[in-house]
Image (cartoon, rainbow, N blue to C red):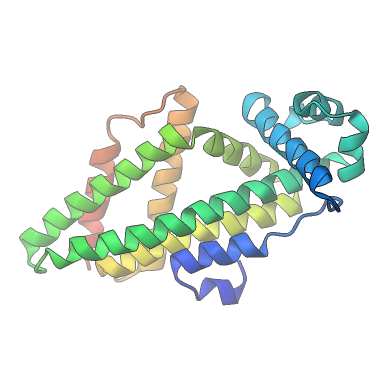
Length: 237
């Protein structure tokens, strides 16, 4: 994430990342060719979610997309270009989704804050409410965006070996971090950046464990963990 983007609010950061995404493969010149290019990228993501990154090959993608093999090699000279553009598209769509999410979340959060007077009892109640909101977010991610999470996990691993993908992963993580940081700033955290890193790490682990277990629900300790964390943050705020 560039310094200019880092200075933006969470929703603006997500929008800026979506607009800054750059593709590596050959650009489509006509509507019909753009549709075919899109079919190839969509097929690539389906293969990644279903079979993993190592299953992405030109022939497999062409079969999945139901296009000639020559079409995949025309738009993407190698697998690195194909993977990079598939993840770039994923980031673009995810960032647009997160922009809307952060905009609505901040408005909701300020409504919640307005109901509390800052007393210890009120702050404890606030911590409970924010923990519940966060748990609901994780639950929605696992239920409605499971394929997106699976793709992200696959790309996280592949990014260890690919500088191109590493750049995109950092951009996506920057969106999540900025959103969490903004949330914690509104709550009055003394160290919102540090607290945001802990919170996003907790959420990431919960999502990974649920995916690993093959379930659409986080483990039963999720709400208790988030509640404890929020109480610790707000107690020191």
